[in-house]
Image 1 (tube, rainbow, N blue to C red):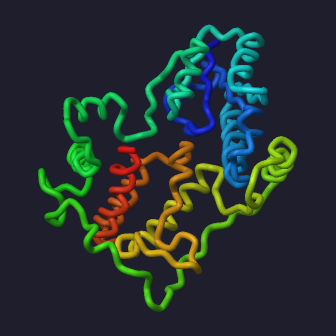
Image 2: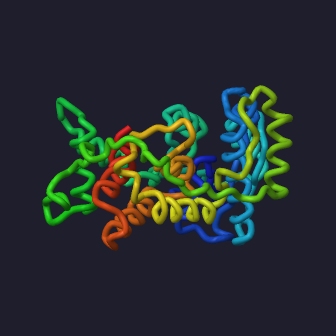
Length: 302
């Protein structure tokens, strides 16, 4: 049986090497690396977010019928070697990581690498766009993305007649302070309790406060936060996207990046949600364009 190795930032059922697979066809490998967890570089909430999300995703795959080898090892390398020794997979494949170091590790371990599909622009497409350009400007890349993905376009022209609404998106915070929507807070469960205990034991030098339910650790939780943002916050994102207040931790920002970064959300569905809200007349063009630019422009360009 083949093995699909799912990294901690690839938690999507339809992602890369796992896409199209059915239970009984492949075994799934997931590894918690002690060297990474205990490095001391992490905020406790970030560690919790990743570990709890990984563990919950593994349980979802088991519930679907997949054989999952979820193991803790001294390092990623050690985990893969131990898996190979125990299960002797015919092939071991994984989606390309988001880091060069991670990709080098996969190659060193002779892992079959599948293209990363967690962006709207693949590495090959970006290379083709860059070509022999003397200047790689984000604004040029963003406009190219808008055109090829047909987002906020009217034929070959941008909806509204202009590409960028930054000039309209620099208003100060509302004078009345405004009552911003309260964030969704999930109740902690047995999985959270185990992760908190594990972090205390395995990462004593981690910094910051412990997890409190602010960050979703399931796809359903991430979707709930996406919908709340689009319905209650995105209408104000444009005008106040550069505003800062000492009494508000995020103002009109989405706080969706963590979910995009580990696969609980895909940029296509995030952009589609914002695009649909604009088409339905629920948000102004300045808010739609400003937010979509962050996703298909800055995030993919960087």
